Length: 186
Image 1 (tube, helix red, strand yellow):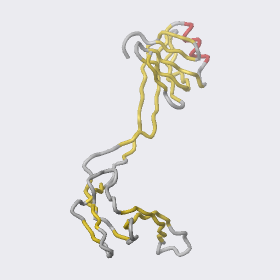
Image 2 (cartoon, rainbow, N blue to C red; image 1 turned 30 degrees about the vertical axis):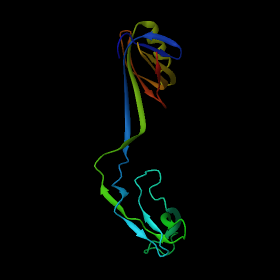
Image 3 (cartoon, one colour; image 1 turned 45 degrees about the vertical axis):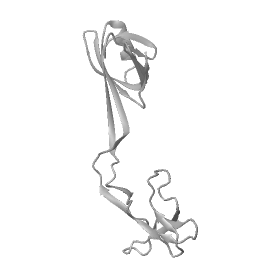
Image 4 (cartoon, rainbow, N blue to C red; image 1 turned 135 degrees about the vertical axis):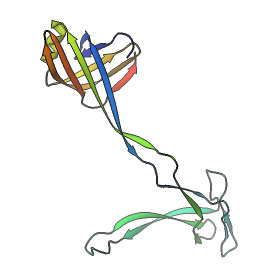
């Protein structure tokens, strides 16, 4: 954090030495494979209608309609168990309704994609001086609104106050985020 940092707890503004730590837990959502059209595939159905993939990504199969149907999969080991229901896609000619399966190419994925699932944050601070220390002690083991004001950003949220050490008028506290951490331009 650049420049002076102010911490505002429950509306009380104090100059303090502090650090903000934000940790983001992510989840891997990379597919095992990726499927793309096989542009070499063509088919003429029983009525003479021509079908193939188009290079137009919005309408890759202009002569076919994609339909879905439910499939029940039974676990062969347990006869009393309810079946797993999943949706299956299939394609039919838009003119005659003949069902067909366009040819797709399946390749291994060469990238990784991660999405955030949980963010945690904490503020470690040191307050020197009687007034700031008094307020921190008053908020010990309780939830407070916390704002860190830096030169260019404000971070804010609800945090739980834990006093870690007290010595000679100096209070070390850990404010653990209790929910989302907001941010905005200063």
